[in-house]
Length: 115
Image (cartoon, helix red, strand yellow):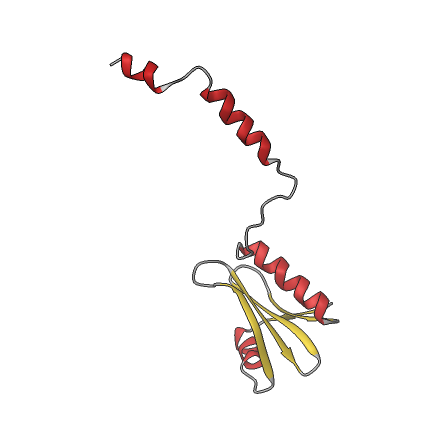
């Protein structure tokens, strides 16, 4: 990955709006957050155009599609756009045992007598 600081949003916009730029995805929102990344492909170059309200703007160039897609997934996680995935090691049988323990000793008949 190579990174270059860009001082103007106009420069990033010119790259993004060029005829040869194929926009893959935009992540983030400058109206609701402080940064936005636009992932695009120009010829054989995999680029990330990073707009920021707080820090320097920059352009990142990735070596290959795998590195590009990994960065896209990472940016989605940073912004909170990544889909939620349940942990695989969760044991669902434990939940059922807990429910059985809390329901022991309680019945509908016992409850109705107290009114």
